[in-house]
Length: 370
Image (tube, rainbow, N blue to C red; front, side, top):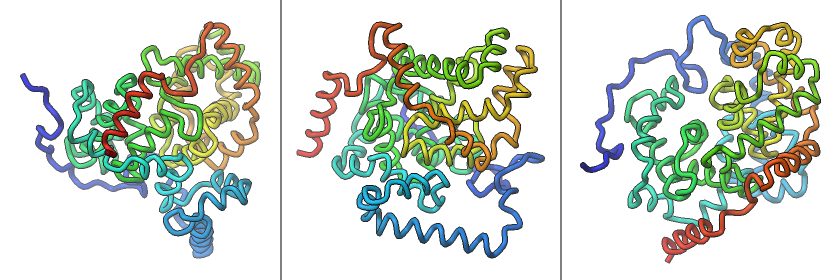
């Protein structure tokens, strides 16, 4: 029996029209959305936003032509502006520039098309099964086997062929889905490659390898940071037998895109792509600090619920992110990484590709260029 691909499925019925928020998600009745905070904005505030966009356009140049020069000349300005939030209309382009994915795309013309059209993946049925679980309330992904789900399938299938050691893991859908809301399939694919293979920052592929080795390292580091930065809460977690795997795994696997409000996840992703994974630790510590006095009073069952359902006021990026930026973790993260590697007697992941896999991928890319 031939294996089915997504092109073998007819698109499902178009979902009925529904009120959408400014990001394209179906509005939930009686729930707060970021749109509510945007209501009543004055003409001055709109003009201020337009000025901000003009500053960003001047900084990056036409199509990003001035970006590298500006980053080298004024890195502190770039960092400050990214932490304040990238204008939504420019987010897709800037994410590609700061992640290094634009360079990968330009160096590998035609490779994505080859992966999607001519290659097969052992993960195809798993991807088809899972795609409807990725941002199901977003207008782009709502129609079963519709354009959005097909684009998501193509990106995930292409990556599972490009890197057969990682293949496909369910959490990857939220990364690819988020990227597809801001860029084309091919751009999203190369940004996924840049993240997992470490074009700018440390590779993330260990989040999705068998046994989730990098998740285990991050949870070890985070558990120790909680005990050091929030000792009373850390002690309470010990008493109630709470460990980070019960609430924080998805923070790292999806970089908050699964469980956090979308407007907050976007702001975190802005910083994550520029500064690396340390922002995930900082935001995690910041939200625990913000909710500290409430969490420390709760017994096990209520504590688990609270750690998976933070209050709306804790999700305000203008409150939470400055708290996160004030937390310094870089040096301690490196020390804890070394402790974890000694404990496990081997590095969690190499900073380079597995040599055999790297050679295989290089042969594949070179064969497509010739």
